[in-house]
Length: 183
Length: 157
Image (cartoon, rainbow over all chains, first blue to last red; front, side, top):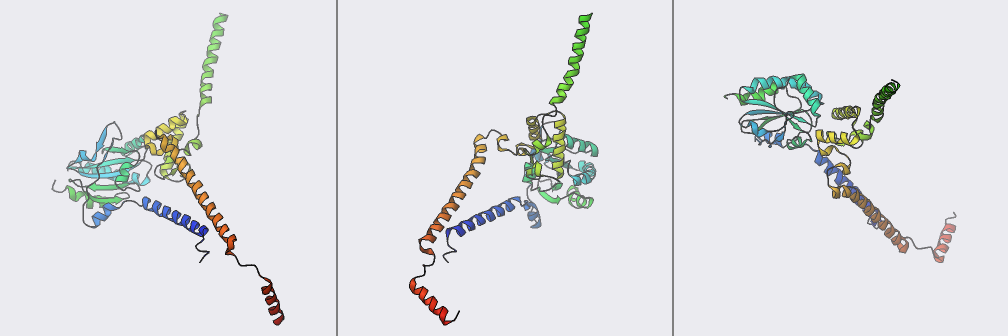
C-alpha cells in the first residue's frame, strides 16, 4: 500500500490522466456538428445560420438574407475538391430549372484560391451566385466537415435537408422540387 | 564616331546585364522554406506535413506560381492570408499584432515543462528521502545470524 501511494507513481498517474483528458478534449473538439441532422431526425426544422460573406468575384458582400422568400440550395465547394467537379453540372442544371420558380443555388467557395475557383466556374459555366468563405468560418457555422456539402433551405429560412457529400438527381428531386411546388 | 560606338556598346552591355541581374534575384525563396511556416487550413497541420490532401496540393501549386513570379517570402505569406485568412500562418509572430499573445505562446509551454520537471524532481527526492529514513528492512543482528546458522545445520544444507 505504501508503494502505491508514494509520490512518483501518483505523479506519473496524474501526467497520464492529464494526457488522456487532453486527448479526449481534442477528439471532442474535432467531432463535426451534426445538430441539423439530429433536429431533422426529431422532425424539427432549424433556422439556417445567418451567412454574410464577400462575393467570390466583383467585390461587395452577399448574404443568405438576400434570398429571403426563396428556396436556397446552399452548396459548399472548392476547386480542389474532386467530388465537387462531379456535382457541378447537376447543380447548374438545377439552378436553371428552379430560377424561375423562386429558387436558387447559392455556392460558397471555401478555403480556396480565388483564381482557381474562377477557372472552375468558367470550366463548368456556372451562373449561380457565389460567395467566398476564405477561412472556413461559414463552414464551421454549418458544421461542414468535408466538401462538398449541401443544405436545402426553405422560403422561411429553415433547413429542410442536408447532403454530406455530392448531391445527385434523386436528392434534388426528393428534397428541392417539393419546396417549389405551388410557387 | 568612336565615342558614339563606345556609348552604344556600353548601352548594349547594360541592357543585356539587366535581365541577368534580375534572373539572379529570382527565385527569392523556396517552397520548402515556406511550407513549414504556413498551415494547410483543411488538414489542420503545417503544409509541410500535409502530403496527400488535394487542398495542400493546390496550395503548393499556388505558392510555386508566386515563387516563379519572383515574389518574396513575406509577399507570398500576404497573398496566402488574402486567400485563406490569418489562420494560414503557422508561426505565432506572423499573426496580426498580438505581441503579448505571441510571447505567451512560447512562455506558457516552457513554464509548464519547468513546473512539471520541478514537480517530478521534488517527488523523487521526497520518495528517496522517505526510503532512507527507515522505509527499508532492518539490518540482521547477531541473534538472527546465529538462528540462520542453526537452521541451516538442522536442514543439512
